[in-house]
Length: 141
Image (cartoon, rainbow, N blue to C red; front, side, top):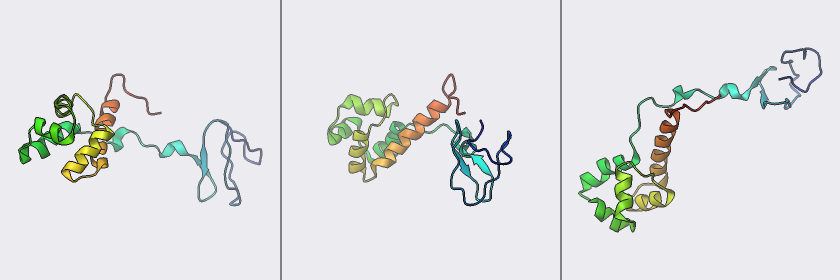
């Protein structure tokens, strides 16, 4: 990749820019100017999966059963009736066979006095873990 810059020092290496330059256009990669004078590709800031927890997260449905239904003595049928959804839907969520949708997150948040994002973040963490550990693994670069 060569920058679209023809000043001194552009022969195969990144040139030093005066501080008056605001941006640099490249042929195939977005770049940013360092606060000093050199530039770095923005993709170098993306971390490998080591930034994600290595321990397998709990499915949000299992969490729902462990932290809310069992301690409060609420059955799956009772929760389905309270939320206005089918018993099958609640059962599949609790058994880890179904994802928590935005609609379900809103209903759970209203009933258990949490936020919808609480449930959606748990679901997203679960899906991200599964994607990172899938066969074949997802290539991040």
